[in-house]
Length: 113
Length: 115
Image (tube, rainbow over all chains, first blue to last red; front, side, top):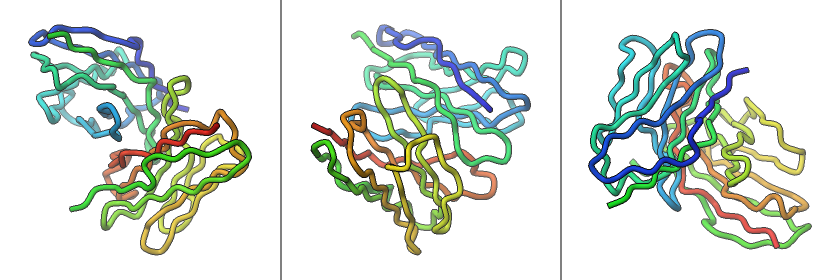
């Protein structure tokens, strides 16, 4: 069965600084990979997804993620963080043939002014 | 296009009672999934319905059940509530087929508190 690890429970950055959130997955083949964001009191919103092809994918709100097969990673990045980016970020993986993502435990992003 | 709507948004129940939560998916979506979110366990998959049939099921006791109607609206029910059932219950809809596998559209959730 597939699994997802987000090693950082909390990340604190200053507004305007760059951001990288880590995600590692465990799955025998190339999975489908996702990043979702959850603002306080809200449901989850899809930021970006990787199915195949170019390993650097662009998402909404200026986010991007890079798939690295050799490291089983799918890290999320943003060059300059805004205060409104403070939220919970979830990495998710879907095994081939399934429609049900497995979510990581999430990383809480705190943005200091 | 209207998003995923969950009702009620907040509710308080006591142990032993039962609760029913409702979810209206995005128009045209035939798959509805339910997740339980708690600080200790994160996001845990409950079940998924596709075209009125339960297609996938997570590892929850039989007290948790669901159904889907012909218009794709879904309900989940929790019977004999326990304190540990206090959580945010999230509903997500998707096409459930084709290449959009795993791409979910979430509602804002139903916050259940069990006293």
